Image (cartoon, rainbow, N blue to C red; front, side, top):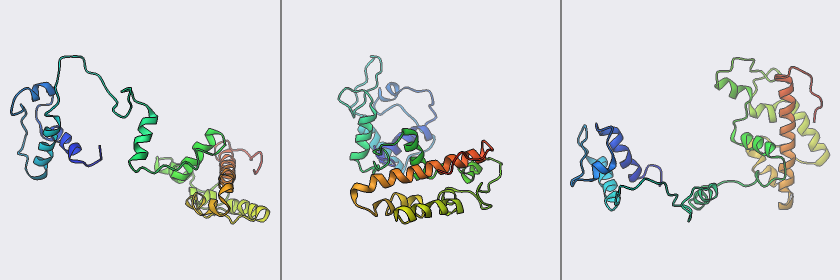
Length: 223
């Protein structure tokens, strides 16, 4: 069911306008016209949505048997993540497999996925959750954010520059750049290797930062 469809809007009408809060569907559908009243008259699009909803459920034959749930997206009638995933993909949802196909530990995949979504708990994101600590970067005096910690900080720039000198790879400028043009700068066969390298870099830099911020100790190593 598409979000914002007439069916979805129709379902919301009884909740918003019906004073009969403790009423069963069987009681409503038992009579013709259906036994339901509203606080105010339905007009315009709301009336059309309600009529559409009634038209959809008119053919449903209610029985006295025990209710049961049936998952229409699988032949067994049982829910499965695979069937839900297939439905979403087949209906236009774009899900990148770049991260999940990498041969790296799952915890690193999740970290990189969070990084890509911009929800790593850097100090700016912690502040959005009412954290009251020092918001400055542990490597310099500037405000810490994902962009700053992994790309703009003097520490990050120095390390990316070292990789550039050794491997000849141009430093990425943002997480969007890593998962976009940066990891595609070499041939297709090297894209996964570049993402693995970027994942290792960001994971290591994040671990060092956590040692400094939360453990209050000197990092065991730079990389």
